[in-house]
Length: 359
Image 1: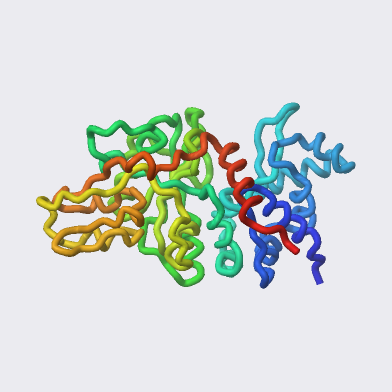
Image 2 (image 1 turned 120 degrees about the vertical axis):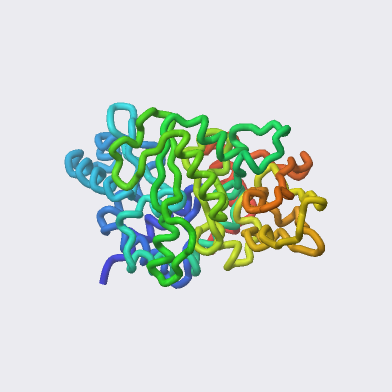
């Protein structure tokens, strides 16, 4: 029988991060880690810091052989289990959250068994992480859906985030690949996860990514919106490096809303849909397209401002141009944390106040 200790330690370490990795009573959180990490890899990952350190520093701290540590860290980084990047003194390695992090890096490794183990954990434990504030993701609309005269900050617009980047790429959506492997194929485009960088040519020659120009990225954004997908980004104003294009049938975050009845799993944008009743023909396209169930049709389209996330999916689909996004009242808008570090602090503070310690 495999010793569960390395996986118990790693699960606890991942749950201590702001993102969280809630334990599941059925042990599915451990079975998922067992499939991804060898016992040796799990034991080492549990000792890593989120801040990247060189193998020499890590080996010294753990009283281990630097050469052996370096080889193991390199292999773990290749598998997408830990981060790798510049650190003081050379190439460094660090602990990565499970979501957003380890899971999203498993696109090439995703097979039927991994898909099943993730599905088991999603249903038994992971959805607890979706209840923590601030949320993982924030909705951002396409610029065309917002009234032209409104001033829109770059972090409030998917197009604005793309325009601030210097390199663009797209890769397959791991959520749609995972649900297909468990028999729940999503009808939306699979090539839909956009990755951005401030470094020119950052994605040139990268396996698993299709490099884009800025215009191609903007065009793809529009195409994905027309396909009914919701643009979402990390829930902070600075440092947005990806744009997820989400749906309630496959997305690990929006499924929490669709299947778990969790209404606030994603932070809404600073906008809300408004209907021009004179232009509305009550065709019902908007109600069919709204992923948040915010629109009904009664003589004309009616928007529930509480349920509306301000994504703009309905405005892109309206054949009569009767829908636009307008800015919400200031008291209805929560400013996202400034950066990922601020976001992490706020989540840890929320957890300390709202989640009792284990017995």
